[in-house]
Image (tube, rainbow, N blue to C red; front, side, top):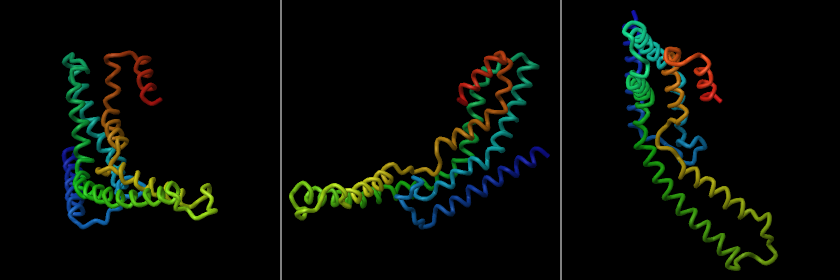
Length: 208
């Protein structure tokens, strides 16, 4: 039953990855100035929240194997640090790895927007400088409260959004969420190498 459920999850991940690949082949209308910082694809990063139970299940599976080795063969938890890192890396690759298929389109959209918005930014800055530094402003027009300042500021903000745009539709927080969900079932085994008080201080330090 366990293997059947596990294989069903892997099949769903395969279907999800194939769907993402097919969507990435489409001519997507990506907006580099989108406020989410990923050209409108930030919602895909929420997959880490949906897959957190699967990550926790893998962590529980590894925790059972490690507990068996610790209590029956006298092994130490720190001897399995590589295995823990590998299962975390596995879950990250399985969950957010398929999202990398959008990286080429996002990268191309960022480059194209950087070029086009950069040209417009140079033109706007030149006209602003000509008007207010080169004596082109109409006589009597006040500098303070001028809409030119607001236009320059707004355009600069839009250009900064383009330049700081990510080329992958997930964040570090999503990766951290997957890592925590995977490692959480293993944390009780820390009681085999440290007292409860020290473990609580460590967990509080991570949370706070």
